Image (cartoon, rainbow over all chains, first blue to last red; front, side, top):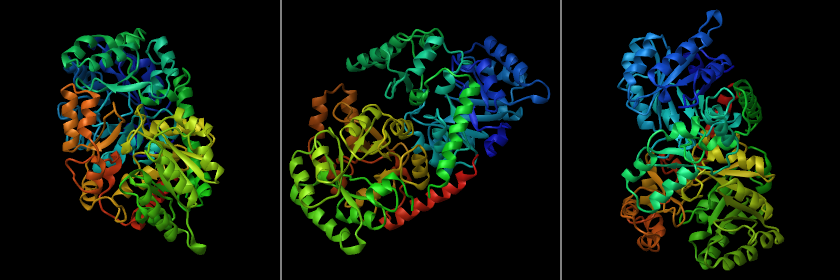
Length: 320
Length: 320
């Protein structure tokens, strides 16, 4: 158990937050993380409002019962088409923690805060961290270039980003990008963050709703197996599969932004990560995926990370 | 003082290695680092053989005198046109530590080792670290995407790279890329490395041979002020100055590799970093440059880094 501003803010035992990833983060994954002492987040970005409501109700049943209730939250991408529906459901159902991403935090923070909700915004730069603080959020997730999925334009890595963010804001900082092991968690926290947000490793757990073939694919990832691409649309880190190579082909042929958009089409992320089309689908995963070797239960994964964190801490105590 | 495989290998007090950067790392910088307990490296990549010999002789005078002699080395890029001359001078003058980079370590390692020289090779991936170990080097520098200057094609960040390299090789690992402060040094070492190699922060010291205007420019760098570019030639991290924007223009216009080469021409790195042409010159610097706020002496810089390292260590001792 680590006590710090983030564990106090969320009332959690371990400063581990499970990223609210699209197509992976249903109530099974999020409740398992929360019940094992971290903070589980529903990934609303891939849910229609009725599906989101269903998962919120299941989370409440799993996590809010009686004296042993545990904290949990939701991740809402601010660019979601029917975002008002998600915000309304969250408020109506008494969600206590909302992470927002991919948009302007000034938009909904004050409304959520007025309802007593703890609000956290995901950023990729110190400038955006300061804007989020000014918008009134309770904490920020600062995410480096190595993270999977959508990512910042400046390509600042976690090691380069976190100290500057921690120096620039007074609110607590959660770090994300490149963290799948206890060593990486310890390193990331020594930069000044009060917690880590982990994506790739949770995407491959038994409780994740990712397709079984996709989870197997994650456990076979090699170093250098991902790339940040589609920078002209919105930068996204993907597995270098057939679809990715087709994008490379479009770039080489001097294709336009329209050509990229048309080739991407719709539903590629669902096809890849939820339905298991590993060649034609969009497979979002971080550089840390090459540290994910097995499909573990959330309990075992968190145990392993915390154990390696502690081994690292003891090793570094004497490194003076 | 930290005792570990790297400080024992090089017989140094502090596990801080000054990168052998072109146009910055003459005998003044390298000897200052070595005399203050780190490992200074001459950057041979920007020296004609006669200039290199002159610097080697000055290093010997500064560092090898009597009982108070300290360790130092040279960095030789293996793609250097007259590399035989540099290797011959190093052997003849009794250089004891040679870092090689940008090429195949199988080429010269056995010859240098036969002369009793300690050999270290710079890599950007676990695969190349294993190849370097197989070639017989004594240690590797594993350098992440955030590093300045020439860089790997896979874009693996320091946080993502170091644990895998440390798991894959038996020889000691030095980490580079994104390290300019004590917090970053502590984080990088907690990933498993036995030392850090620091470039950007040393490039801006008083003893660096970089142009004064360029050093001022380094101290004014902002987050996001660099980019990895020219990936079709050899990926290099540069300041986003006028020259960089011209490359962006060539890319947007669908220019060829030949167009890029022709526009780059020759002598751009010297023009920028040594002669101070901040717009037309090639300015190689890492993402960590935004942590470099002043032109310090090597002594003060190393003191600051080691002090912040120790503060971080004490802070993290209790984070369980």
